[in-house]
Amino acid sequence: MKGIAINIIAVILALLFMFPLIWMLIVSLKPDGVNVSALSDWVNLSDLHLHNYTKVIKDSQILRWTWNSAVIGVLTTVISLIFSSLAAFSFSKLPFKSRGLFYLVIVSGLLIPTEAILIPLYETTLHLKLIDNMWAIILPGLTNPIGILLLKQFMDGVPKDYIEAAQIDGCRNFGLWYRICLPLTRSAMFSVGIFYFILSWNNFLWPYLSITSQENMILSAGLPTFLSNNTMSLNLIMAASAIAAIPTILVFAVLQRQIVQGVAMSGIKG
Image (cartoon, rainbow, N blue to C red; front, top):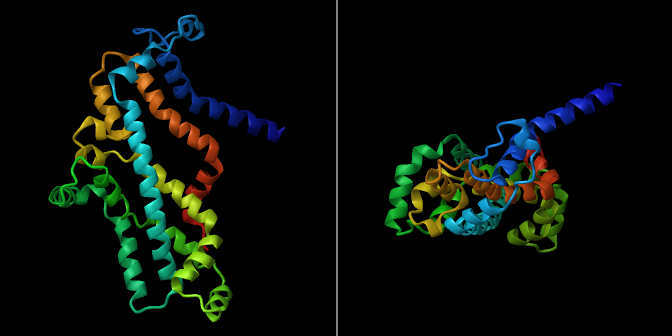
């Protein structure tokens, strides 16, 4: 009986969390002016259509924004993973002077809020002539030290015997990283990669400031611009929000186990 009660509570909570999503989807399919505020509007499915979606796609560049977000997210994730894993390998397996000090300095970057560096970051980007360029979003995204912190915990768990055996066979530092540590921390790399991609996809403030043209905007920055111009049409707003939510829903549905592992990684000691 206890298990049945827990399952019933879990289903109720799941429905409560899904309610806003279901409401958004139904409103997005309703004619303009119908906001599903009454129960009769919910059960009436005869007036559902895709006109709101076609209008959003026609009147905005939401598909281009989604593509930009995907490209920037993939590039940021791949480059960040390479840099983070190399740095984590250095701090974990290579003895050098002031290693603890350098690691402390890098990890302390987590204490600095993004808002505190916006002005110097904008001035630097402007000086490098990267304003309204996707690299203005990608390059600052590579400085997040969370990947170094997490991957180091896993590389600390790689047995020293493997490293010493490879060194006896003549394997150099790059080979130790590529042939030993990288395969043994593949699951951690995958989880950190998902974490990086989610951070890039949800990034709003800096892309909103650094991108000036609509065709170069990412989804998180372009969507508010479209919504601000259509505040009187709730149905269009919900259609645009649904289009923006579909990629993240698909990613979560396919990679939910890895995403949960990525969220729990901060509590794992390698």
